[in-house]
Length: 80
Image (cartoon, rainbow, N blue to C red; front, side, top):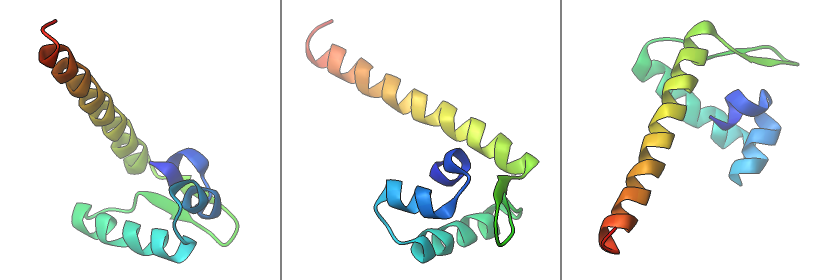
């Protein structure tokens, strides 16, 4: 998500408080698992592929659902 939003590995790594090489290494197995390239990389630029944009949209939806679930649990715990 961070790389897709920042479109730069350095800024995304900083945001995630990790090294740039570690971030790159973390994305490669995900792409292998999915069987597709999520990011188009050149020496100077990073861009989401069409597949990467679909993946990012779905990840955003999952994050929203997780946030909604946490709110629902807190409400349930307080009797709302």
